[in-house]
Image (cartoon, rainbow, N blue to C red; front, side, top):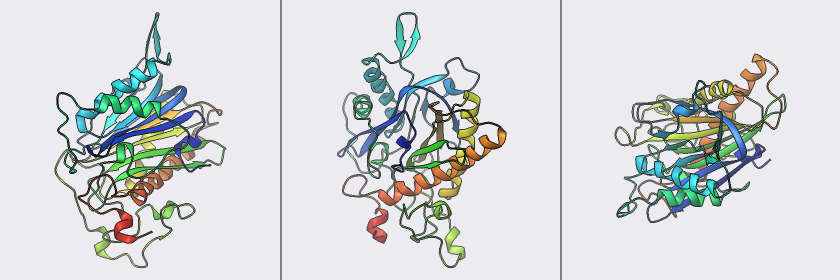
Length: 329
């Protein structure tokens, strides 16, 4: 187990970024088309092919999922990902034609100090193709890919991941690009809201603070409307229907609430994709599906905390300190 979303069989992840732009793209690529759905909350979302993922829509499977910086400009990353996948023969068959199915979601990082004077068109199409090409089982966390230019209320944001195994044997993996309007730590402290769910000191092992004082829940917000968002993918090796993936995404949204305060605001466009690669049997009953969803939420909370814990300021936004700059290791 790598404690990464790629612990789920049939998944690879790749990053591409531009340190001068201070923005990038992360691609989650499936070895074979996977069943997928999505749950979107908050008031400032940006996505592509999200309607296609509703249970009543025709197409059941996707080839990749793209998380990108760049606000609406970043939606171009999906076009580059499609082009890279098409070269390998991937895609939904329509007669002799094949169309790679690549849902995407974006976060706002246009005001983070990077050089956004990109000329006639933004570079996200090329970054999307490069992220797909770079996809593998091992990948780095922190200030990379879609998390390169991310920020939260008081710290550098980033890209995180985590995994777990359910009691029935299914693997759950989470991938998160954290650019939230709120905090991931409890007030102005080194303690993460996700501390109760931490495994093996994966984000410092600091636990909960000895005293919960009113300052712990003091609200701190970043920027204005439309300048934030946390993007996530929950994946499992279980065999799920599209409707079950939708339910998994809905339950996994609780992971954002366990790790970010506040969350699902008018400022955020929080989006959680859920995908099933089908390498293991389906849940035996509703109870087993419920436990899988609960574990997905916990795993996503851990991935969010890891994103902030692993962020660095040697690249990415210089406007805020990283967690390690502020608190050390």
